[in-house]
Structure formats: structure tokens, C-alpha cells
Image (cartoon, rainbow, N blue to C red):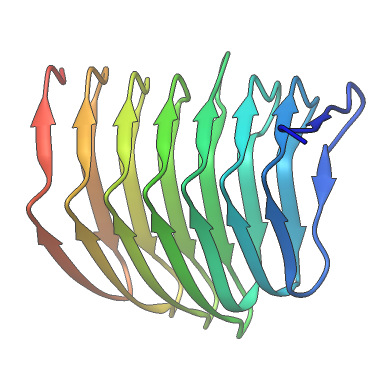
Length: 186
């Protein structure tokens, strides 16, 4: 009953395998990522709370294929160069990412979607509340022959020290930005 608490003072709190579903847990004070997946096929992360991940950030998915869904999760950072959510794809991987209805605050950056080296990322980032980031609220980049498209819709980004949304492409990035709200950003 309730939210079971998971922590790891020496590394990642939850390491994902293919098509894992992580729901209804509270992660506190992980040394590395709260939730991490590398070279996985699919992940479904919903209705969690991630607090104070120390060195990397809240959720990190690297070279994941298939659907990656991160919804209705609260992520609260604590220090330094940490990421709320980072999804990165390299080397011919194809990622389909949904980041929706999350609350993200006190990280260096809120949501990062990075594509490199002939990969492909299709992402939707919508209805998130992102606040108190030190660098950027949402950062989507397409680099090194990556082909990506993103829809950034209906997010609220506030009380940040820098940019609200940053999209950058040295390759092929199609961006659709609509109905995002910004206030009290520097």
C-alpha cells in the first residue's frame, strides 16, 4: 500500500530492462539516476516521485527503441548539473518518446531530448510543469545525421534562470511548438 520507497546511495535506484513498467514508487537520494535504461526496447514510467538524485538526474534513457512513455511523475532535483529527464539516441536507434503530465523542478535542465549518429527520435513533450531550472526548461537537439521530430505542446515553464525552450539542429529536426506558457524566466 502507498508508495514504496527505493534508494541507492551507491548508484542507480531502478535499472530498466525491456518493456519494464515502473509505477507508484518513490525514489529518494539515488547516487546516480533515479530511473535509468540503456539499449532497452520500450519503457512505461508513470505515477512516481523521484527526489534528490545526486549526480546524474531523475530519469535517463539512452539508446532506447520502441515506445518510451514518462507520464504523471514528479521529479525534484537537488544540485549541480543534473537532468530531470534525459532521452538520448545514438547509432541507428529509433526512439518514440512521450513525456507528458510531469512536474519537474530544481534541476540544471528539465527535459533533454538528444539525437546523434544516424539515429531517429520522435517525441512529444506536453502538459508538463517545469520550474526552477538553472539552464533550460526543455532542450531538443538533433546532431550528427540524426533525423528527429518533436511536438512541444501546452507546457508551463516558469521561474527558470535561463531559456524556456531550446531547439537546435545540425542535422534534421522538425519542431512543432504550440500553446506553451512562460513566466518569471531570466
